[in-house]
Image (tube, rainbow, N blue to C red; front, side):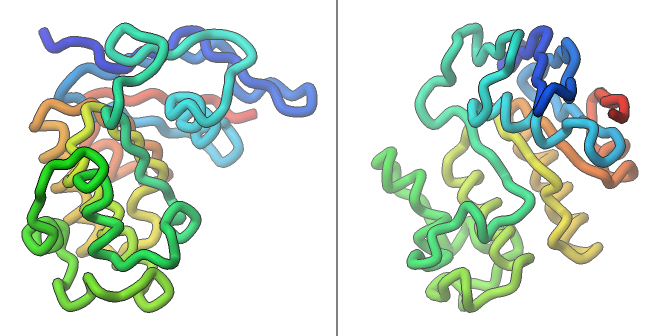
Amino acid sequence: MSVSQLEADSICVSFDGRLVLDAVGLTARGGEIVGVTGPSGCGKTTLLRVLAGLHRPDAGQVRYHGAAQPPPASLALLAQHPRLVCNPRWTLGRIIAEPALIGGTPVSVDAIARRVGLDESLLQRHPGQVSDGQLQRACLGRIVAQQPTIVLCDEPTAMLDPIATDHVAELLSDVADGGASVVLVSHDADLVSALSTHTHTLPGG
């Protein structure tokens, strides 16, 4: 049996006195894609922010490989809105290569671009010069370069057309097959059903 790489236990979060997450638990083992679904406002993105360490829960705990903090470079977040997380001064090639530059491990940016379906001619462009879908592909390339053990995805196909959505689904499957734990938050029930090892459905508020 694969090892639990991400565990959330009894997570509770309230906003302005309203309970958004009520004792939510989640476990993701290596090689698994765990889907998280539910109606708008049920706390899916809040849960992902807690898992990413971006929001401290009112109660409960998250453990990464059994520890309270994830090991360096072990966690990656694929955001719904790539423009909010990408440095507008960087080229797409720099966005992809940054984890490797930090880690001192050489990568072939051109090869990663081809893998994620990004035209190599776009690698010298900046985020403001490409579409949302092209920028999301660069963010996927960044994850490929980083090779994290935990990948958190917040509506990763929201900016993509159906063909690109299929490509992203294939890439996420490849990431999981490589041993990573993937948590997939999405309104796309077909995508979650097709990819997920198991699914958590959060109740509406």
